[in-house]
Length: 189
Image (cartoon, rainbow, N blue to C red):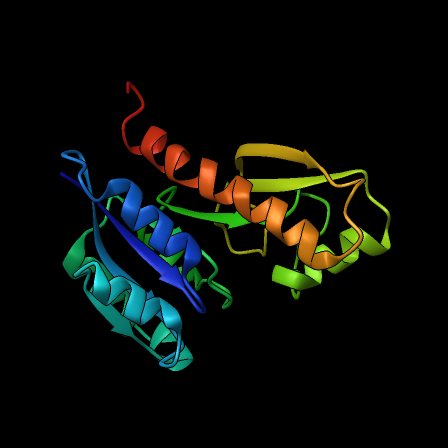
């Protein structure tokens, strides 16, 4: 059984979707959900699926506490699903090519520090982009610069608000993020 650990900072809708996707899998299990936000809705969603949770501070992430917890689990893949802190280099070094992120735009456009969530969708709207999408990529020491694994685009010419763009992008995340995780861990399936 391959193990994944999910990191999130907020609502956890992607986390919930990923847990649901692998709930009955005989190949992949969600071994834990980590969050830096003790009030995050992701905690109650994870607990409702009987998935272990771990709340930590930014200092815990930068020290070795989070790394030690990950080492005790030995995940096959670490998935950032709406996690807003920069991932530290000492964890990246310990789990090379085993940490992925989903970004709500077609990188390299609209990536980098401060470009997350509605900030991205507002920028897409303001620049009158005809399309946007998602990029699933490996995590390295720079925001949104890791090797691309998968991209999918969606037309947003009919969107007149950042919220409408967000809804289209989120549906791409729900559809493709679990499938890409599956393909990474089970390339033959």
